[in-house]
Image 1 (cartoon, protein in one colour):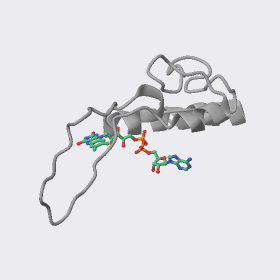
Image 2: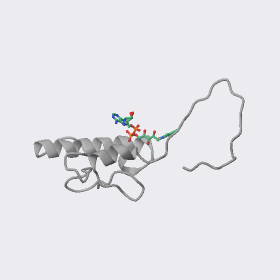
Image 3: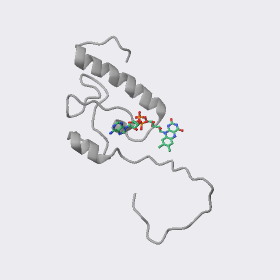
Length: 99
Ligand SMILES: Cc1cc2nc3c(=O)[nH]c(=O)nc-3n(C[C@H](O)[C@H](O)[C@H](O)COP(=O)(O)OP(=O)(O)OC[C@H]3O[C@@H](n4cnc5c(N)ncnc54)[C@H](O)[C@@H]3O)c2cc1C
């Protein structure tokens, strides 16, 4: 996002909700963990195979908007479930959680 000079205007309102989003994850957080990112600034992690949802830091996993970018709740749920299984496999060596 970038500010457009001289584009400001005023609207009368009793109440204002800011429904803001659809931007990349907070970069400072990702940088603090030192994880690799994709070209859109999301956390890089594959969804298939061994180490699914694992980031470049093997002890960090990412799913949902953080990994795939701005998307839908159904994708966040799917990725969260699959990621949980992957974390379980990482910690326990195997998992009975559904994928
Ligand atoms: C305005 C708007 C409208 C949308 N409308 C729809 C819609 O109609 N239908 C639809 O399917 N999808 C919609 N979406 C998309 C949907 O909300 C997201 O795809 C979904 O919520 C992503 O889920 P998530 O769990 O990946 O991330 P999030 O729901 O963003 O969850 C991430 C969580 O991490 C927390 N968090 C962040 N930083 C930290 C930190 N440092 N420490 C601890 N916690 C932290 C946050 O507070 C948040 O609770 C909309 C999104 C927006 C912004």
